[in-house]
Amino acid sequence: MSTEEKSLNFIEQIIEEDLKNGLSKDKLRFRFPPEPNGYLHVGHASAICLNFGLGIDYKAPVNLRFDDTNPSKEEQEYVDAIKRDIEWLGFQWDKECYASDYFQQLYDWAVELIKKGKAYVDDQTSEEMAQQKGTPTKPGTNSPNRDRSVEENLDLLERMKNGEFPNGSYVLRAKIDMASPNMLMRDPIMYRIMHAAHHRTGNSWCIYPMYDWAHGESDYIEQVSHSLCTLEFLPHRELYDWFLTNIYDESKVRPKQREFARRNLSHTVVSKRKLLQLVNEGYVTGWDDPRMSTISGMRRRGYTPASIRNFAKTIGIAKRTNLIDVSLLEFCVREDLNKIAPRVMAVLDPVKLVITNYPEGKEEWLDAENNPEEENMTYRKVPFSRELYIEREDFLEEASKKFFRLSIGKEVRLKNAYIIKGESVVKDENGNITEIHCTYDEDSRSGSGTEASKRKVKGTIHWVSISHAKAAEVRVYDRLFTHENPDGNKEVDFKEYINPVSLKVITGYVEPSLVTAKDLDHFQFQRLGYFCVDRDSTPEKLVFNKTVGLRDTWAKISE
Image (tube, rainbow, N blue to C red):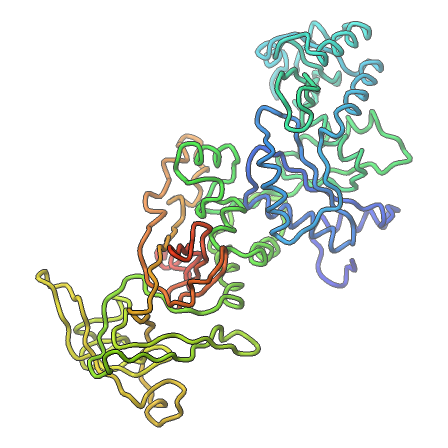
């Protein structure tokens, strides 16, 4: 990477400084280290783009390493979902690694620390240890077990490993400094007893390493040069370095932990624990519900990998946590879909339109452009007939001069078709309009080259032919939370802010070309928004998810 190509963020500045100070470029290696205890969310997407983006920029390998040290919460389902999400975003890892790959090496190093007098087995209760740790302003006191002999510690650790003791009876602690101003340095726990089957190692282990012990040492084993974490791990850096110092071989690369701020997204939660709550308590249909902030939810809703990568690039990285408005993500989605989504016609709130002077039984197949953004324009055929559906809001019986859609005595153009003029309406006993009657100008067909076809009218509306239209279930999503920061007030349960109308299911009608659409195919329903095919869809029952509107309607509401 050349510093002349672009301005560098602070992580890139750190890397450039390390290269200037003698780190060989071929020693650069990054990693993305998720815990497989849930599905990845939009926050992880930013971290993925950061780490894999650095790998691309510096032509350096990036490992995917699963932090699988807590078998009580981790599942193979989550491992598979994480891999699927990263690949979908467009990234490929160099090595697929697991902290569990290193359980024996971590254990051997723990034995060495005991032999050096730098770790001991403690049998205090968790309550006793918490009290003995002190407070940020008051030093801790030493555990009564801190000065066990090396032989006794080794014996107890081996028996812990062999499963002789119940959960919670013993832990292995690093012997550091009970008076340290950093509470994490006050003899932190390295291992706890956990009789639980691991998704990879089965019942081979009865003790499992804590994150702080496993993480830095895993970086070291893999020779990761820069270990990038979110800001809450800043206090952990001192412990990360202490553990490394005690096992480090100077002939190898010593990993460097550096921290960047989380970018929280408005109207969402990104805690895996809270996302799991939403799933388990039935507020959403699953981890991939299109209202969720998970990558799989965004994929199902119709967000594109390019739009998420562009969003991550736009917000960048920083040293201070802040709240990003979800409308910025939606803008990135809209911008990408505008370029790639074919335009089709669909009517979501239909009212019947009858062209009274169009021959009964006649049908035409008209040319319609697929996407005006295409470099080489392509077209498809759409059927036209005497009876059509149009959007109810596209007609007013009596309209002001500022209403440019259909009304009695006024003309509009039917998209790709003819100019029509409103003549009369049919109403039911409650006064609701059930049919609109109009006439058409036979010579005004779009693209025919006639004088009438070139005639200018102020409005154009979309439509579908009733005899050819296909019914579709359309799922219209709104934001899952009404509050921009539902997780911001710890006194209020975040679920209090759940939007009761975050999903509206309606029946719409679409042009027949959509019968062959496949899962995740994107479309712009003209004048309505962007939609994608849901995985529940079949040729017999079409299902579409609304991805995003053509413009930011929330901005208007908040003004």
